[in-house]
Length: 242
Image (cartoon, rainbow, N blue to C red):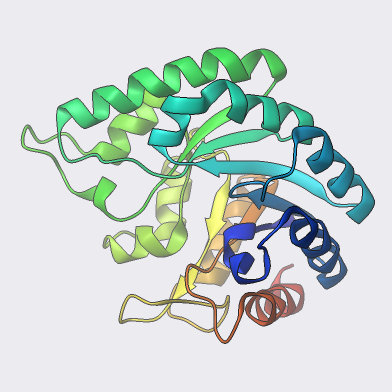
């Protein structure tokens, strides 16, 4: 199983394209196998490719919100192709109404049309609101899995929604493309892997049983800073992953 890092976690040290290139090298040196982008800090697609090659690290995927996908999907796909990403993920969307779900479905259908010819799998990254039924009883996360695209379950938000993350991954084995490995405390605050209440060992076991290639570490609110936080996460994972 490979371990990636969602670069949003270390956004505090990425203020420019040069910073991003240096961050890739630092992440690789820590022991991460790949990265998931959340923007490219002003680099061109060609510069992103060079930065990845110089760091010797793999681009797994990228995150873009529904508005960004709708407005700039050709550019988003172009970056994914240049970087060699295997996945392109919607970072989140409103799902409170049927209209929200239909909009998401329509946008992702267009994104898939552009991405799939390049062998890129399109997915959706959840928070907790996708587990709240809309007025007609539809459960958004199930609608997305059945009608829209693959899933990238965020394990902490699945947990916060009152669902067991490992069970959710097993129940949606065919729909899960990537796993966002996130830990957090019982007050709803994300934290470094192994420092919270999420059943990380159980999640990793489920991922291993199902042959999932990647888990992507993320912390929305790293402490005391992004790089030290993700260092603790990878240290815990290297000591505990089997």
